[in-house]
Length: 397
Image (cartoon, rainbow, N blue to C red; front, side):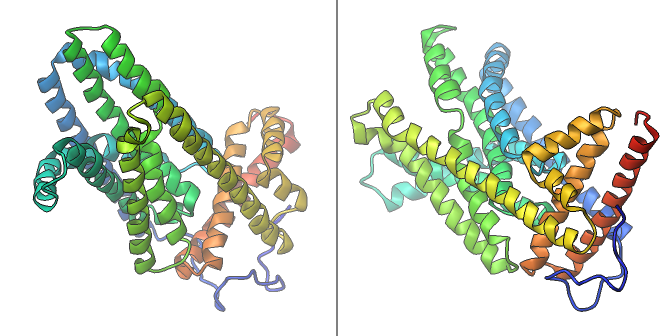
């Protein structure tokens, strides 16, 4: 199939009246963006190393290594869940690496630096509040969610073209939360190890409660910020982003407060609290994510259908690119020629194209998105040509 860029083609909705001539983002702009991404990842990585060295010195090598290994298990559970959420339109690996480094390093450092000061301020404002409630139920949620949320907010601006909606927000925010939980779990496991004087039931109990019963806690809290920002960025305007961040932060802090102090509602019975309140909330979150995934699939089909109407795709291609069964069929076909990798590229480019169309329809950065749209159309046309050429020749890619 050949694209249809001629003057006789109907204009897609959402385009400005005059076409933008560039087929790609200027090299200087793309280069500057790449340098910025590398610098941010490097800076966040340095902070994580410094935090790790601090904990290594404070906890001792044996406790740090053992508890770090244990903390990898709930981290793996969280990352697998986030990978499932992110399968339809995978986010850039660089952005996800930055999100993890921010959560595991920068947000922990900010919490350590600001926690004591915020606690003192709260003690002056709420002198009658018990110290444990002040620290655990009020200060920790406020400081931790703000520290994590700033990383998600930064991704809105440095990865704007890939921050399309609530599902992207959940992936980015969830990765930040998973990183924070990883470092925090090392501290909790080390405390249990020190309290018991060695490996024993105390460490096992804390590991089961934090690592197996509730590995997604921080992911869920910070995901509220991601959802709110994802809704906000659908339309242009810094005020919307600021409002979305504030609303998401309020929800994240409230959820964290409820998580930390909710056992008082059930007479400090953890298991009753877990099965009556935490399990239903987790099930609600899974249901919400599933609904958002289906919405994104429908949006992909709708937007690619508009390109099909203009001659860029056939209806059969739209079905292959916009449904889970169609994608499996396409990958199976490409596998016969050893071309699964370029087929994945074709699927990814088409999905990004559909979401770029959605940004255009919503009025977000029309000139940049029109240039990005043209670049994606050029790239996916080349990818398709290569795939069809390999299939016609009957040779492996």
